[in-house]
Length: 440
Ligand code: GUN
Ligand code: ZN
Image (cartoon, rainbow, N blue to C red; front, side):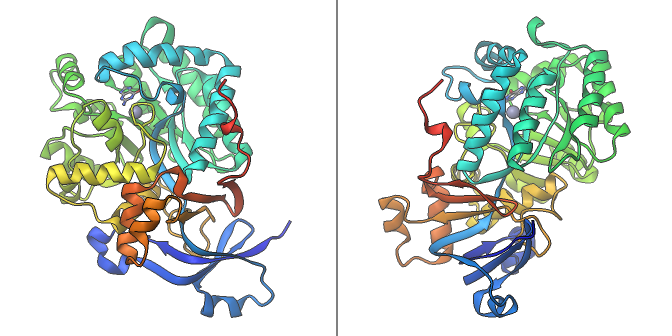
């Protein structure tokens, strides 16, 4: 059915990176109108200019709200939702003690369905409309996620985790990993708004043969992504160096198996040499910056300035369950603090870019989402600077820059008044939400 509707609010988008494009990258309409036709942006601009072009348009008005593009979470693990805030370990021990036992439960499709539904509900509650997601080694965990995402029309990219060297109850084989991946690509890639990513967990959980097979899989499907972890933790890096003594560094391990290219997304990249960053830039690969995870696990401080110096693509990742919040606003708040410890301060307009158009570009979706450009899919969020008394106090009479920064430092799901997915209302704060029922 044909639909046409307008949304009047203060509108802000940052389609280009202000770090390189300057202030012109910021698109701001104090009294703006976003017109959505059949789930896509038909127009976006000052209300006084756009409204006359659509006589008789039905308009929803949100005075005081800030309308921004839906957030893009470039790295998150849905099976770890229930293991968020697990105490006491750094990466390798945390995986063994808290994560692998939780992931083993995803052999059960019913469990996967329940968690997938809750997970997507949390994304929407936090204004996240697109995500690159780790499931588990189980094919059924991918089916559960994609089925739930399709029902919500969300842009979700995911793919069965390859890990033939994982713990005995969480292992595939080179052959089963390949066959299941091929079947999942055929079943899901390009269906609705879904996309596939070849997903070797990390170098330590795959044999050389499986890493090589992942490279072949990627080469055989020219429009799927590659998603893995890289250079997160010193013990992990030492173990990789021990197993692959001939490789120049951790990135080079993936490179030798054909896994480093323009469709590759590497989570973390906390401990990177100039050589590795230069190689990533030359390959056109991207980094998911996961500050809450890197702080929670004590992994280290991501060097955004180093990535910038090489012009490597960067997006934001919550990395739940090592990450401590589904909120991309909260994630940007921690990114700011990591920057402070590194001697650079993350500008709030740039932060919004990284969380929207920057992430979209890294996922190969820059033409479709992230910028509120005409023709793009109408994923957007209404942010409320009055959602808490403190935020309201800090924002009263403040400049756009300061209001945005206050949202970055103080905001979370409470600041997300509404989330729209392809023009459809998918979350309204205060409305009944199945995730608010008593815990399972
Ligand atoms: N490296 C390999 N697996 C994982 C994981 O599940 N989470 C994080 N943060 N790093 C990883
Ligand atoms: Zn991760």
